[in-house]
Structures are given as structure tokens and as C-alpha cells.
Image (cartoon, rainbow, N blue to C red):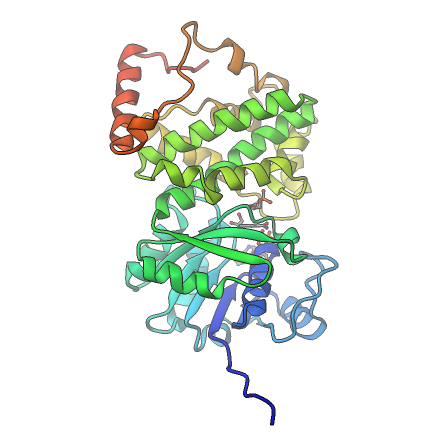
Length: 375
Ligand SMILES: NC(=O)c1ccc[n+]([C@@H]2O[C@H](COP(=O)([O-])OP(=O)(O)OC[C@H]3O[C@@H](n4cnc5c(N)ncnc54)[C@H](O)[C@@H]3O)[C@@H](O)[C@H]2O)c1
Ligand SMILES: O=P(O)(O)OC[C@H](O)CO
């Protein structure tokens, strides 16, 4: 007699682009019973019948057992966990459509790496605002996760974050298989901002790469970019260690190094002299960094955080800074020598956020009217 196969936990993935489809594969390969929601019925058919998503994951065979539908009610019926992977700027409208079909007690997980224009909200904040669910049932996943590499089953790690460790663990138990491992943390702010901010630094790296600058310039931007990311996230309550982890440094390395990254690619086109309108036209897929620059700089200003690299990305996008002038601020800013770190080891272990804000206030007073390190 054949052993009885236990049916996996029923989960839904909303959004059948490159990351939603890849994540549906991760979960299916981990044993879950997955239904993937695609907006277009023809894409849902291709995924279910041909086991392909040829537009987003060319050459990838999707696992047997993964089903797709263009009906949200069918995707969400019975789903204990719901993973959302639509472009950040469309999350609000999609949650409004999904809300009537959500199972009571379902965990909702953001796979996205953006902030909403206008509100500046992180994705988990929009989920909390729109859905009538216990905030402890909300999670976010981030890390060095270039979809196509994972779809090819190359070993990769990510971090699942939730205010509730129990929720993070429940999600991590499903989001794991022979090629994918999920760690957990409870620093949702740091985990989500890590994913948002590394996109902006990856655009900067793309720009200097397109200009033709070499490894020193890129390493300098990556390292100073990580300082900007950490200062920003800590000012909003993140733990600095999160930014040194998979969702910060890990993702920064992957995104800044890889030609698969859309943010990096968009930057490279800008660096090669294309205008923003042409770049947007050429990018077939979601490029979150281009939409996040404005809201991130507004959030930075609100906390008095200085982000010279992100500010220069904004200027290149606006056409007010030549791409080749992006990096020289590293050599020309501020006559006085600046400390390399904004938080030292002692401060990082206790009171880091407080120290960060004291230091920023002090810097603002010291430079009274002139933004420290600004142009
Ligand atoms: N691709 C990756 O490697 C990767 C990895 C980690 C995280 N992410 C994040 O995942 C999110 C989704 O990115 P992606 O790479 O899957 O993008 P994508 O461009 O590959 O796919 C986006 C999907 O959303 C659909 N879509 C577009 N507008 C929509 C709308 N208004 N409503 C519903 N669906 C809409 C598209 O048809 C497509 O199926 C982004 O926040 C991205 O930063 C991507
Ligand atoms: O292609 P990108 O630039 O959106 O990056 C994809 C993932 O976020 C990498 O972790």
C-alpha cells in the first residue's frame, strides 16, 4: 500500500510577476499547496497548463502541483497564509479587492520592497491600515533574492520578519526547501527599509557603472550607502544589526552586483546617458527604486537624516545632475574630516537610535542652515 501523502498547508500568492511566481515555486517545492493569483487569465492558464511563466521567468519549469487562477476568491479560499507580490504602488488597490475573500486568522506576508508615494508608508503598514487583522498576523520577507537565480534553484537565504516571533516562525516553516532557507527576526522596520533603501543605492551603482567608473567608486558608494541606509532605518526605530544582515548588507551586495537587478539596470541606462522617460520605457518590469526616491528623501528630511547618495540619485533622475558627477561628493564634501561611522560599537549596543538622533540634531545645529555633507 502506498503511504498516504499529507496535503500541504493551503497558501495563496498574489501577483504572478517574477518574484510572485518564484515565491510560489519556493512554497510548492517546500510542500505547501499553493494557488497563485495572476491578473491576466492567459498567464494563469500558461502557469497551470504549460508550467511556464515565459514573460517573467524564461526557461524555468514550474513545479507540478502549482496552480494559478485569475480569480481572487478562488486563490484566497482556504488560504492560511497569503503572500503579496504586486508593485508597491498598486498594493492598496489590490488589498481592497482581496479583503472580502481573506480567511479569518490568515497570515498576510509582504514580499515587496517599496514605500507608497504620497503616504510614505511601508508595505506592512498599508496592510495593517487596510485589513481588519491582528497586527501580529502581518509579516514581511526580504533578503538577497534575485528571482531568476532562485527559480534556477541556486541556494539562497532570506529573513521573515514580524512583530510576532510565532508568526515569523510559522511563515519561515513554509518558506523553506532544499534551495531556500528562511531566518526570522522581529525588526519589521529594519527588514522592510533594508529592502527599500538598497534599491536606491543599486540605482547609484548602476549610474556610476554606466559612466564607466570602476570598483573603488562602487565599493565606496556601497559602503557609504550602507551608512545612509542604517542611519535612516535606525532613525525610524530599526535595529542597526538588521541592516548588517540579509535584508540590509546581504541584499545590497546582491542588488548592486547583479545585472539581473532592475534597479541596477535602470541606473546603468541613466549612466549611459538615457533620460528617465526612455529608461522607464525600456524597463519591462517593476523598478521600485525609481518610485521610492521621493518618499524616502521626504522621510529622511522629517527625521533630519542626511542621505547624500540618495539625494544625488534624485538629481540624476530629475536631470539636474550629470551622471558622471554622482560620486565626486565623496571627495569634495565637507572641509572637516568626518567620522567614518555614525554609531560606534558601544553605542550600537544600547541607545543606538537615541545616539543617532542626538548626533543628527547636533550636526544640524553645528552646520546651522547648511546640510552637513550637502552640496
Ligand atoms: N524580482 C525579484 O527578484 C524580486 C525579489 C524580491 C522582491 N521583489 C519585490 O517584489 C515586488 C514585485 O516585483 P516583481 O519582481 O515580481 O515585479 P514584476 O514586474 O516581475 O511583476 C509584477 C507583477 O504585478 C503585476 N501588476 C502590475 N501592476 C499591477 C496592478 N496594478 N495590480 C496587480 N498586479 C499588477 C504584473 O502584471 C506582474 O505580474 C516588488 O516590490 C519587488 O521589489 C522582487
Ligand atoms: O531586480 P531588483 O533590483 O528589483 O532586485 C530584486 C531583489 O530585490 C534582489 O534582492
